[in-house]
Image (cartoon, rainbow, N blue to C red; front, side):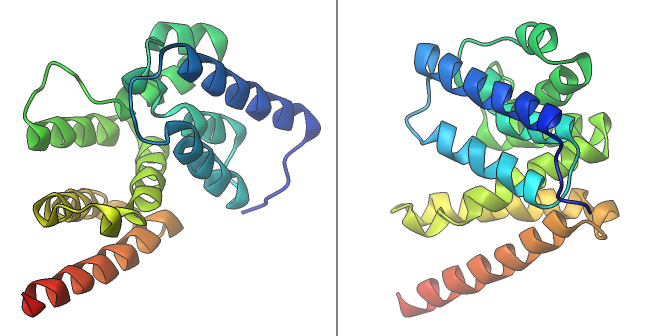
Length: 184
């Protein structure tokens, strides 16, 4: 994929980044580093040659679930396509069970198409580098189970780099957890 981005499209991505920062600073609800994480997802997509709408959706992918921003606001500010993808990538807060919550969101992501699946793969990939920092071993196992579930449902996208990188990260984290459990 071509990693060139035109000045016009760079401006669109910068607009999304500014929007992310502004809106998250106004009403952010997650104690995790949402802005930094979102920028990492967007930059991965940029560096691997994805189109501008995909990069923008990557930058904004957590904004609806982690702030007061609505899908309708995303639609008005960016595009119906970007809003549709972000809606698919967002947890439904009315689902309380964490496993049901991510499984339902992954199903919606599949229905939304290849690009949301790629964005979700990059999202999970970026998050996977922090699993070892979670002190609760059971939470680490849960996150690994979530990654495995996603890899299984994304099996039709094995030609996509983010899916393969996520599979490699899963294997490394699984091996690390297995060694930890064998030590105890």
